[in-house]
Length: 295
Image (cartoon, rainbow, N blue to C red; front, side):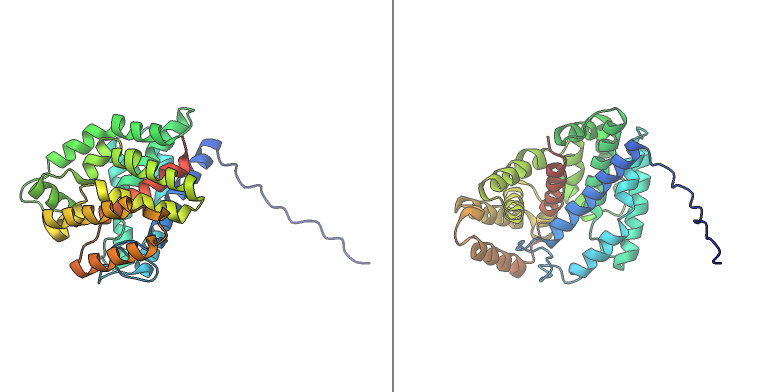
């Protein structure tokens, strides 16, 4: 007679609180937005799956390693947002994430801007979830500005003159450009007022997310005082990049029959000049994140 086997006891997994589960979904949206940005092509002077752009020290696999290292960060900082954290708490999480990124990339800065920008937006989304609100695009930007804007501006103003500076801070000091910190402190107006409308209009016209992403990127390059363009090319490089993007849009952007050849020509020109609109690329990641939130 065969012995009857009893089913093995498997303890039920502890239930994840609904607000924590929602926060973790927000964190995953941030990571997907960054992947969509780096996977997009063509992008003038920027890394794509097939090109290093103007970057001899990194390629698509570098960004993949970086994104893998950041997988825990965005859900973690969103969950942190549920507790209504102060800026110092968020900053400590960002510093730890940056260390993980640099370890994964061999010291190459791939996502410092995204760690800052999307980290703040994720935390703001968590804050709204805890308050029982829907974390829509306009509201998360408002929370960033209202809750941490003063601290962000104070941090920008208090950097000692003798301290080693990031490229963005060096450009801000040299040319008076506010850069990513000023954009965040103000609630991401470029992403809200330039990137997101361009993305939504192109998506409505074409039904194609990738075309909408390209259109949004060129709209941002044409309007933003991109600190990466300033760092690499000075005011003349910034003016050249903005003019090239504006010409692309004036010719119809992605709605033009020859848009791909036009974009590729701008890419070749940027690479020849060693220009890279990395600040606009960061804001494209913000734009895609806000589009994913809706509202």
